[in-house]
Structures are given as structure tokens and as C-alpha cells.
Image 1 (cartoon, rainbow, N blue to C red):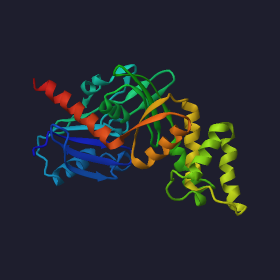
Image 2 (image 1 turned 30 degrees about the horizontal axis):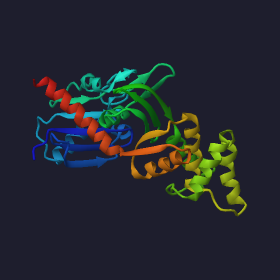
Image 3 (image 1 turned 30 degrees about the vertical axis):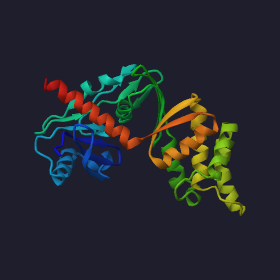
Image 4 (image 1 turned 180 degrees about the horizontal axis):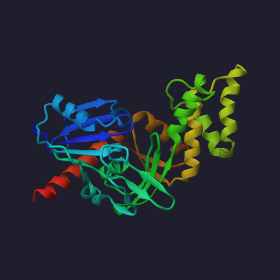
Length: 290
């Protein structure tokens, strides 16, 4: 089958490229850790190397979302201010200068009051094509409100980054190794935080104290429960949430949302990104070719 475009999700630490046909079928795929932090100005080289290895034609267009469009990325794609119609995002994509093939980078979204930004998640929202409260967990979890195809509000929570910092660079590092699981330890820590979120720093020290006293260790599950619980308290979620996540994070957030009485509709994050990139590519090149 002939590829319609190359779709790239270019994050801070990761790179994922898919060759897509017109109906969204993935023909070929490549992943690497060549994200923004390791690219160091080699964006064009990295992209062309992956395309060459997949046998892509020299004129195959490329659509990109994520940190490649940041100020420190390949070429800046300025933020669109909300409220923003998601269907307008593709036509604000920026063409990368100085390269032979047609490479477009999608813009992120911004909010002035309170100040907030997103880059990459707007493409997932575009791929979803429905309204409601959307949760997109990750290093920086996003919560967005979409009404009639417009993003009207969003907020960012540094839950994933706090987990990484505490589990790797604090006194909790020795006792929070491994992967958090949706188990009783996670749910107990989550509910304790939901009940008394103001006790979070005390709860964090308690993870260490229990180990020193020979009691059951807290581990990654407990730390995750504490931090996700704090996020849910802050968000004050609605009765129904669309959760855009991979399986592991999706399981944790589903459990947390269920604990506070919210129903959850789950969507795989990679599928949402792919759908958004295809929708953007189809609109850009169909419009320009008519």
C-alpha cells in the first residue's frame, strides 16, 4: 500500500514515526529515544534517517506534533490561544524551512488566565472528535474541557514529574523502585489523600518511616496513589471523564476516578495521537491540493 504521509509524535524524550495510508492504517513504524533533549539540532537528520530506513519516497509529506514545535525545538509553531476550535489547528501548522520535503509542525494551545500551555495533547484532542472533560495523564497531566469542538479551558498538573523526582532523587528513592500497580496499596494511599490532601508531605515521609520501623513498605504504588489523589482533589472532576492514556497509567487513573464516583471512557493515547495527526494531514494537503 502507498503511504499518504509520515506522522511523527516528537516529544521531550521520545520519537515515534508512522507511515500512514489515507484511511489511517499504519504501514510502517519506528520508535527511538531521540526526543528534544537528545536531538541537539539534528532534527532533519534524525527524521530523514528514519524515513530512509522505512523506504519512504523523497516527496512524502510529514506532519509532526509535540516538542519539535517548541521554542527550543526544530522550528517554533506558535501557540493558539483558547478558546480554540480544534478543527482550526491543522491550518495553523508551520512549514519547516530549509528542507526539501514538505514538513509541517502543529501548534500547541495556550491559556492566559490562569497561564498554561500544552503541546502535543491538542493533537490527541483533535483525534478524539468529541466533547466533554478529557484527562490526558503523563509527565505533565492535562485536563481539558471541550465544548462543541472548542477547547474552552484546560489545566496542567505536574504529577508525573513529581513522581519521577521523588522516586529518583529523594530519600524515597530506595523504597519506590519499580512500577506502580493498581493494587490495595495504591488505593489506600489514594483514599488517604482524597480524605486529607493537606497531609501530603506528612504522608510522603510516612512511606519512609514505615520501612524504617519494619512495617510494610509504601513503594511505587503508594507514591503514585498519593500524587494522583492530590491531582484529583485539585481538579474536582465531573461525573464522566474521557481518559486518554496508555494501559499502565490508564489503569491507575481509572481506579482513582472510580473511587470518587466518576465514570470513565478510555482511549489509547497512541491511537488518539495517530488519529489527530492523520486528520491534520488530510485537512492540510487536501485543502492545498484542491
